[in-house]
Length: 538
Image 1: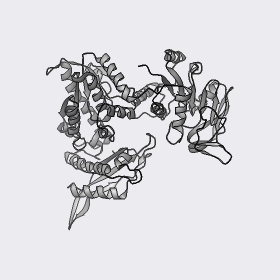
Image 2: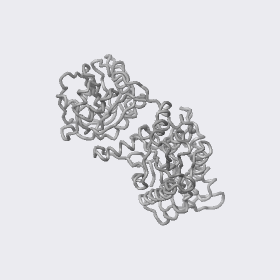
Image 3: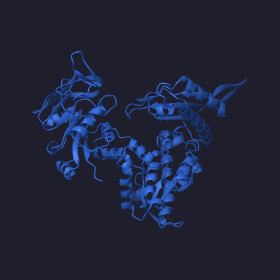
Image 4: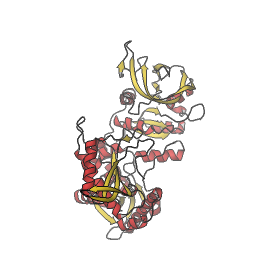
């Protein structure tokens, strides 16, 4: 099935991905490409008639200092264009307006007056002033301002600090806003972007995960034919959904390799096997490599070194297993494909890194270079999807909701949750303490929302501190280890902060850990904010 699409040109903002996510949430397919593509590329991209509109993203830069601009073809295709922040400034400058450095930079909450009753903002407002002006509560993030409208444009929005906060040329369906509708702080941002892609662009909302299964299955079958596929199964959401999807498409032609490094959560390895071997009836090779990993980590306390050891060993163990499968030992004819759970943010970030346009590149755990090293072809069935879409797809494939929507637990696992040297004793204590924390988060219901605190947090885990503290058990003193609890709430990746868990919940968790896990006698709660503190402890 051919989907209608929206093209998003990326000028290097760390929130460009959010624009794409909001468009996808409106069930419209979109792609992010670097801003420096050529006009010929744009015309070719639009040639099949499926392109319904273009969005120009924000940037960290100033239009009068860099030459990053939209290819001229964008304004010549006859499709609607929406500029956001820098996207508005480059549109203004390219079409004959003027951009200048502002006397005051504007970062954070603002109230914008909608003007001119344009198609984009018509009937979209958060409140009305006594004078009858429709107002929007938005998020601003800019230092420069459009000071002169290009010919054909009229004023669409304004604030006291930013007189031209939005502009529109309704004849050509060109719109631009200085604020960020893609972030959740802009209350009507979703409505505004939906108005643009569904209303003004007229794109069909046909990007639906339930329907996508059939498309993806067909694609996998066409690509693989009767050949065999190896997948490195980590137990995380992406590799799990990739495994379920590929298995749906080709059944026993898929073999999963699950490297159990001994740094998983409590019973996590058994759960992975039960799901994929027991319920999906997929072929899974479980490699118990815990002694190998713990042996290599002995005496190492530097966090980054630990990560590298864990990542490198995973690759080594996986390569050894993959080589056996490729060679066709044990009744196999020999695998020719390596499958990876690469998702769309990884693709965007890799593209950004190559084009040097992205300023913030988050690390992702794809095993780069492996296909070439093993002489295998690459199969990436999730590469068009965002995380929330992967989860939707997983549920539609029949994976348990709790498995698909569980908190992320990074590849290095408990290895980076143990401060200093990783020892088996520490990992075993931490595993049990962590399981109690997660269990109580699932049990504790918030009276206001009716949700559990597990659902109200996006990531929660326990950290092992290899220091002994004094505690009192009955009449005796004990000298045992300390653990820290960490829980994070987030809306989008830019707004993570520590979760204000109820004291009653913290009290219950700490009492259970101290009473049930012999070897731990003190529990602390981490209240470090992000930024500046990272989500992970290391």
